[in-house]
Image 1 (tube, rainbow, N blue to C red):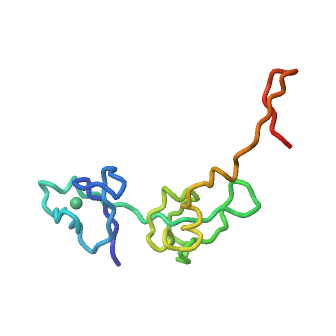
Image 2 (cartoon, helix red, strand yellow):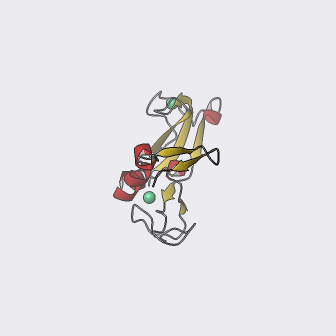
Length: 125
Ligand SMILES: [Zn+2]
Ligand SMILES: [Zn+2]
């Protein structure tokens, strides 16, 4: 099974240090750096696969108990924070894509009215 690595000789697609890749050997597919070379081995760091566990629809601060990619639970690490997950199958799943969607700010836009008498803003009803 492929392992996960971070190449700190590269940047991710957002320009942050550390390019995440899955491979049998610690050789970066982007820059070609070979992590088996002790001289540069510190630049290619093995990392764990972290699955995404979607938040429970009702219970607060609880997950659903199921991983978004459908992988078996034992021995796996998971998070309810989509930006902390790195499992490609979880990120590609419907739940993963829905969680990664930016918040629709317009949906939360409230109309405010000035309440001059009490010197404050109020949400228009
Ligand atoms: Zn690299
Ligand atoms: Zn997963």
